[in-house]
Image 1 (tube, one colour):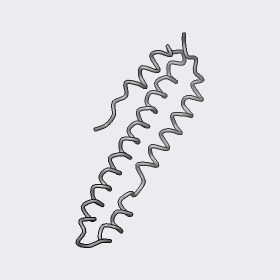
Image 2 (cartoon, rainbow, N blue to C red):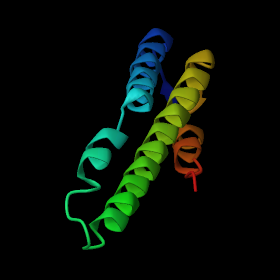
Image 3 (cartoon, rainbow, N blue to C red):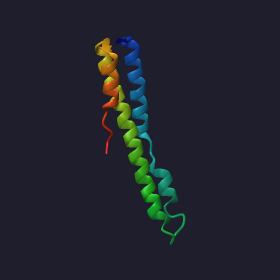
Length: 99
């Protein structure tokens, strides 16, 4: 079985996903953490706040990386307008998660 794709539609999808990844890359997630870091002096909240900031930054970086990989796969599929469905599924499944 082959997956027949509309290359223009696939490229439009890739551009949309890439745009979402770019938007995530522009978010300033540090601001809320900076404002709350000193909220509860003497409680250790500032350490928890810093860990929360780091975890959020890493999670968003992972999401952004995954979106960029989907963009690359979609653009590659658009270049070869008739591909085996199993190959496409395997490529999506094999994407590495950033550490």
